[in-house]
Length: 313
Image 1 (tube, rainbow, N blue to C red):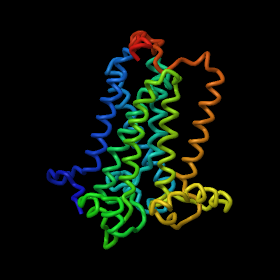
Image 2: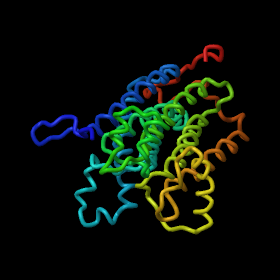
Image 3: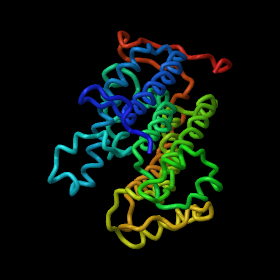
Image 4: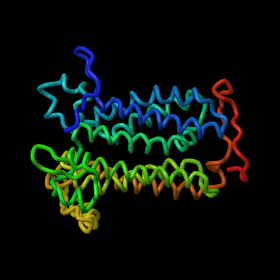
């Protein structure tokens, strides 16, 4: 097992988990700043957005997890603040980040969806790097697998195989599945945002669709899913949607209560995002394109930005 603690200074311990999340956030910030320059948005805007959004995302991610796992914390509430022990939910983080960003962008006079489009690829970058924090903590993994599956089916390097050996058993490296899916999604969004047909808000919706599709299937093999008892017809539907993954050697979905919250939420988000795109497309004449200039209603917040011409974009 790799040491999850990067550095100790007296009683202060700096965990790799926090370092990795910080690196993901900084790389995502850099990508957003570069794209923001195309629209004349000052880099300070994104620095402040990160300072507002990251703490909100972490707090919401923790509260989301604690709310669904309250039995673990009711008798030991001090554990709630020990986020380095793991136990955060990505959808909670998204809720917190979106709420903070809505308030911040409105205060600065920008359209939330226009800024969210710019930040969409950065969200995937943060997630593809952040998942390696789970790797260092040996958490958020999937169900048991054979060593042969990891070495010869997935062809993983030794350091990943060894880290997936936990208390005498090898496990699905679900952190890696999500990380690679996020990397592929990042590349897709980079190409998509240069498409002339792309309307404002659609890249952000595309992010939700892409991430939720991957999360739905990865969630099926995780052993730490937040779950609840729901109607059998819904459980059967979710299992039927997941069943194609068995052909990739993933076996059956992990046992537990019949409804996985992240899977259900992923399906709901995909349906909602597709519906939003379709409904907004019916009002296409009143919706700007992604490449159109981004204007602030408050000149002191950045003024009116000028984007590239269609030929340059």
